[in-house]
Image (cartoon, rainbow, N blue to C red; front, side, top):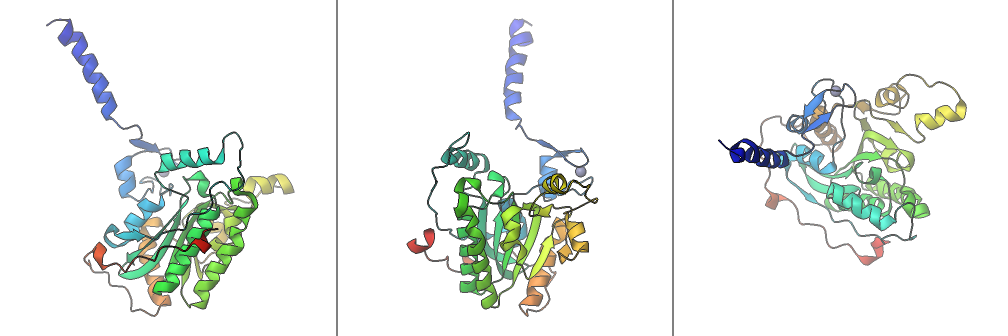
Amino acid sequence: MNWITNYVRPRINSLFSRREVPENLWTKCPDCGTMLFHRELSDNLNVCTNCDHHLAITPRERFTALFDGGVFREVKVPEPVADPLQFRDQKKYPDRMKAAQRSTGEKEAMLVAEGEIGRTPIIAAGQDFSFMAGSMGMYVGNAIIAAAERAVQTGRPLVLFSAAGGARMQEGILSLMQMPRTTVAVQMLKEANLPYVVVLTHPTTGGVTASYAMLGDVQIAEPNALICFAGPRVIEQTIREKLPEGFQRAEYLLEHGMLDRVTHRKAMKDELVSILRMLTGKPAPTRADLPAPVAEALPEPAPEPTAEKTE
Ligand SMILES: [Zn+2]
């Protein structure tokens, strides 16, 4: 026994073992405060195992759980002009973008994919709240148009998972222009007689609820999701009145006729399959354990987007 075994080695060991532990192994449920182990949480689709609170989930995680066998292919989205207004607040807009890309590993705030759910071919678009609050800029507009065009091209229904803090202020009026653009995209689906189903997740607010997120043939929401144009705090300050309990939450909106369904995240896939098969005149879903599709079985990828659609 000497100072090397007694002092140096434990110090070295503790240094190394400390490094091996990833930082966010545990997540605290924002509702009940239970500490949730990350693997247990992701196995449960980011729903609290204690109180059923629905925590945020990225589109990529959601799609992996949603599509049969976790197999899906991304649909290409035309790139818009970067930083058209040369916007700068405390940080430059391109710097904010880079930071968001680094922290999420995603290019932008919406992911579009095609694949099968319960052997029902669909196009899915998912908005990523962790990417600049899922804000709707030109890219998100392009993504919805690309999703709608791909749906029309392949004759598939479109399922959209919304989550947004509203329009992207760094793109000013150009972000607001995505409201009519996406409305036209939804209209394309209606003209092609294809179902458009919206799943509203927490929170869906601002310009997004004034356009594509409220135009679904069927409007589903996740439990307790905040869905509004102006948030409760703003309304309370404006009208100087106390708002009712659960105001602008999914269950409240369902009760008041704004939504068709409030569905638990774990029941969402089955519900979507049933609704989509019903709307497209397909026979009822088979609940048997079907083999997962292979990537090669997916249809041909969409052709390269043309330059005229990139504005
Ligand atoms: Zn909880």
